[in-house]
Amino acid sequence: MAQKKILVTGGAGFIGGNFVQHMVHKYPHYEVVNLDLLTYAGDLSKHLHIEYKDNYRFVQIDITNREEITSLFEKEKFDYITHFAAESHVDRSILEPDVFIRTNVLGTQVLLDAAIKYGITKFVHVSTDEVYGELDFDPNTFFTESTPLQPNSPYSASKASSDLLVRAYHETYGLPMNITRCSNNYGPYHFPEKLIPLTISRVLNNQKVPVYGDGKNIRDWLHVLDHCTAIDLVLHKGINGEVYNVGGHNERTNLEVVLTIIRTLGKSEELIEFVTDRLGHDKRYAIDPTKLEQLGWKPMFSFETGIAQTVKWYLEHRDWWERIINRDANVS
Image 1 (spheres, rainbow, N blue to C red):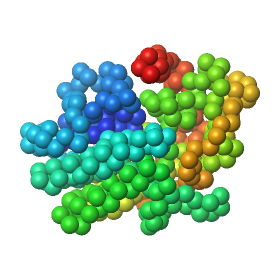
Image 2: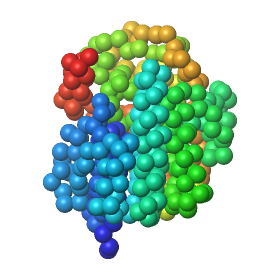
Image 3: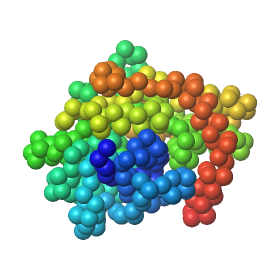
């Protein structure tokens, strides 16, 4: 089988990192190049077990650096790009929106220009359901691929902007592309500032767990390994120019998620601490994944099995997340 070369941007992050490992193991005839700037959320220790593999390499580049990106594409001749690299934490976007615009919009444009210039076979842009805005609490309403984009945070606005750029490059220049929009991910190697790993780490240390507002905001939870198989399928079989929503019909309130973790670990619900709600906090996200399922995707994890697996993983890998928490504490 002919050798293929795939560039995974943001491959030292949470979702991108899991995707790198998925591709390295599943496709030994692919050369997987992991590009990451290694900002605060980037961590290469997750890849120690694949560093020795012949089909994996890492390069440290800022995707907004046009000269270095162009040089990389000139040298490597990539077949595929899966673009994960992005600033992604909503709270940080409220404090520093300019950082999100630079990376998520301008960085995507630099990659798109390189993809056009060097004839990429497929560009998969990994986005988020947050670009659709929010749903009400009617359990019969869902985001579909035709839902209008109505982002409510600087983060989601930057992602919606990059989505529109990718679409425009397809329509204007003929870029072969797909856009995927996923619900909230969880699973191994999730950066400790996000809800599920934050809750696990705090509960294990008998610390208070902050819950925004009344905790009734609803998210549709997707195990990161299910997300990886979805992107793999879209990369290889996605219809050119199409958008695919990735979700698992695993809706839970934030409070339900926290309570599930507390009960799984046998701790007291008194650890919950309700705090002032986030600015512009969307009420509910829920995805209809029918279009992707028709392409052939099916999730492996229910929320119950996925949370149990994730809690077990964090119990078995305390050294990984404790090192990151301690590192960030020392920096601040």
